[in-house]
Length: 291
Image (tube, rainbow, N blue to C red; front, side, top):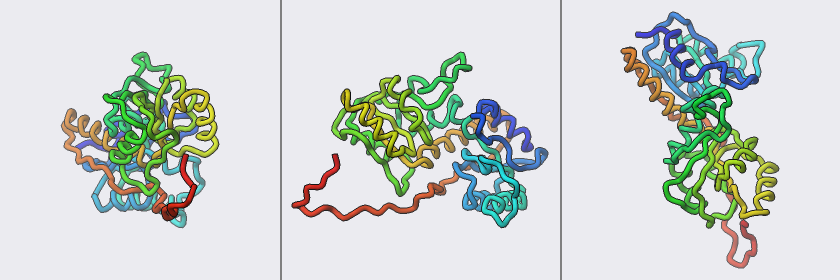
């Protein structure tokens, strides 16, 4: 069986830490480099529920997409919720490793997994990594649908293929318009609108879309035919497919090296929104409508 430092070396070959954004906090948070690893759990968030799942599973290593201490800390006291996570991990001999923006930029990366979940054909990165001579790494992906469909049908496809969350899928644009070229970005993506327009995408699927950027994007689109249309899913839902992709990658490495690792993906929904309340249907005489 491999030891932790061997498994971490394999993970960092997939997602080199030096490709993370300068503000990010990736890498190994805790764990003994010489400890044996037999079982690995992948998840989006290093929250207590996921750590408890790792304990129950008997995992030796937890790999998450989101960092535990993104902005640093001066304490790991168990009186804090993040400190309790660290204490639980160490008490149960579980290591924690984070692959965040380095996994976003990877080939394959987070947006590849998102595109794969929807059955999209990838044509290239949305924001290419200039250090990649092959032109495959970078943020987001530009994709094609095999068959054009309406914006409403595409939103329904996203709702059916992505994990279910309280938010569901939000849409900005005429639901009856036809779309074929799709830009995707797992996680928060409203900073990439200019890149989406340059790519000529009909529709952009991402998460955490805010009022003002969406309103401005719509107003710019009104000068043409309204494109790109926007589809907003829950942040967690757009990144969870990466866990399955990453687990499969580690499985392949384990088989190649003869490690016999047991690799698992957490199915816990750790999206922080837990419910959605909608008003009752308007009476027949009402003139209210959604544009």
